Image 1: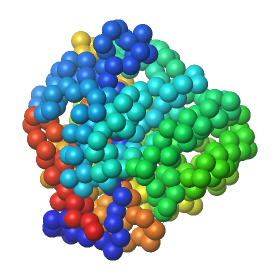
Image 2: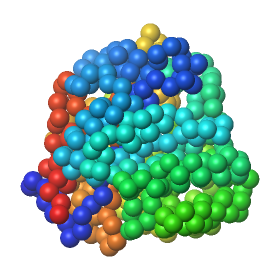
Image 3: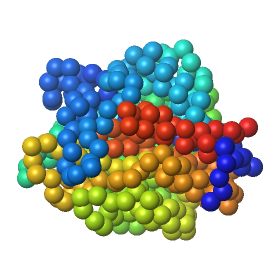
Image 4: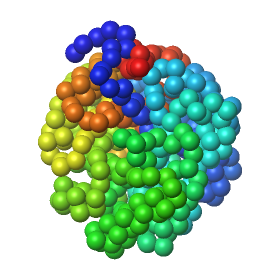
Length: 386
């Protein structure tokens, strides 16, 4: 791996950090969990589950309300000055209306400096189940169904085109509006089949063109290891991707590809090596360009009832990545840069998990242990691009 401050590639890399928007008050969350609830409640309640376990994780900036423009301005400034070029917002649409859209619409889109950082959407179209927190030995209560029928899909497409695609800071990849979809089987199931899903996506493309906004770049998140129990793996994802007319694939988190083979913790340096070797395999397994993913960490214990005994029972009772220091994270970023240098992608891109997945232990935002160390790692690898 090559080192050095901000080593350059022939082409600038799109450094896109996923953004999980559950740190502001939302009416549905209040209905389900009580007045004033946000996922900060779980972050604060975290407890160590084994000796040396770093819980609770404490944000250096405090428990900020991401739906406030001044908070978004702070995030945008920090991200853009440390080599991140865009946020990919996890975007939710349940029962014909958006969910958790306050961080983007009230925060980022009203921030005075949003021209400094691009944004795009990853449609997180999975079932929304009650893991806030999850009680051991209980069923995961379904709160909202991820399946979306055609009429709801069309309303979502209209909403996205009107609210987001027309924004001057919306991220384009190879000149096309980047839109990612998390769960292909949920998409196909809700729309009634692969053919029906292709028709809906073609309609989405046509509507975007008709609005004078150009072409769509449709990206699919791929994975081989289920996290949420309601996630469904496609039987032949390669064929499905082509039939749907997708343009590229990427990953959301290392956990989707690399099983954790020990409990209660796994060494980040060793796990990173295994995850990095997946990139060539994934690239060779799919008929579309693959954009590598780097995960900063993993610790979903805050999403469990803290008084329950922790055990390897499946998400969120999973192993924890340890020793994920900024220095080790930087090595993974360098590997991603080196991987992209050997590819012929028109626009090289790396996705990072994540800006703020605090309850899954994967965040770039500063904490009280490492400060801005993870952001500095991004800056050292990708922060000197022309």
